[in-house]
Length: 572
Ligand code: ATP
Ligand code: MG
Image (cartoon, rainbow, N blue to C red; front, top):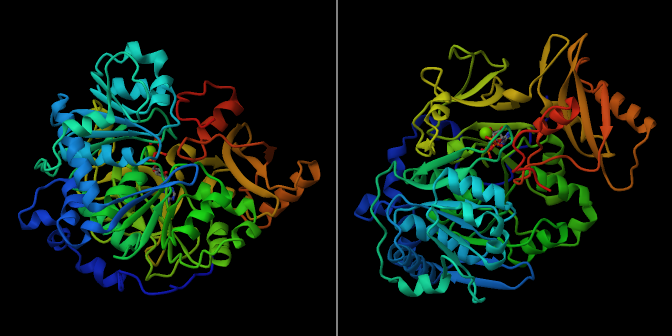
């Protein structure tokens, strides 16, 4: 078992066990303006309440463009702009419950749109701007979107599918380029139509404010809806997991097209009145470090894939920058390899707090908290208010150390309210009475820490044993030549399946039979006898989703010469 890493400093949560035992969701309600007569709406809590108090002139958003230029907005300005946009949408014919897609790069108008849509009772559908026309079309048709907010170049990208977007009545286009013919309106025009004194629509807790399409790791993305009540858990997540404080400057690298990018990337931190940094550009080790340095980022939320890329860039690159303001780092979305945690402590000088959740859970559910020891490779313990367990196929809880289905007791506040037009799929999660079944396999240790094994679909059955790809991948990347690894089970007559690893190398290493043997032996001496990869293939890159997750189903389908399935989410 890995050595523990003790807490490095005090956090918002001071005593996990006591807080967990005594916690009730009702106890955080007083932190919301609606508990005191305010409107029940995520936009009112994220923005308007701050505009009415001392934070009016506080910076809500530093939006860093790809060229390094910065646009900044106070809470007061955001209140004004989102009200205008909400009211402009109404004047353009949008009504409560309408799905409005936001297909934009990470520019301020993206933030204004998403919050503005929620403000008028609409359902915002943020789409990552790297999606191609087919992926946008699939989503627009799936949820019958009536409006798409976009930019001139992205609108142009939609050209081949425009005729098929029959439900879309308006395209709201950012910028002052000449507007193309058609159903187009300028973003600024929508703002001008709107009233800056517009008040957020009062919503019911289960009314959705957002529809997020899942990452597509296991199949066709699902349109998951989250309700306004999710704010309660996103608030707690940002306070206890992300450990945000009043004066922090916070950067969440996840694109708002994914749940992380809105739940802990926009709304959650704004409930606490935190200043956000957003960066339009793609990953680049120096550019990323320079943002942390330049804005004195205190709290950073990112993903394993980005951390592995930073590791690969080399420690010298990171040491060029002053990252001393970084107090707290979080990672979610994929398993966080222990090697990355150890590297973070050494090179970034702070612990990386892994936390587990899904689009469907709406907010972190299992996490490493600042006040707790970290056991590298573990996802941590349940968030106060969330009941998590490991169960078998009958819903019986299994003893510590036993693998099973990672399950939650339904009813946590940010639980999805539904999957758009797919009630059968929604019901599948609740087929085992009393539980929400996540689709992931894990175990709990004697101290109550959760350990991820893999997605149910990815588990390898070899020589009569069940093995998760994560364990093998994590060991592989401990080898100095290995940058990233994707591991699958490959059918084998003798063993059921054998372990096959796809590996990318760090700069300076080249594939060879010698290296292959060395890596094989490296794993053999560290894991159970059945867990070493009997086949290793060196590759240039691993197939990943656009949100940066290794797509093992694609590795497997390629290996077996099978149909590759839905590839709209494959990053290119
Ligand atoms: P799809 O549901 O479309 O197949 P997806 O499951 O990748 O895609 P998300 O909702 O973005 O879509 O991701 C949730 C999944 O990500 C979890 O079910 C889990 O497999 C993985 N995950 C998230 N956080 C962690 C973590 N901290 N450790 C391990 N796995 C994680
Ligand atoms: Mg999923």
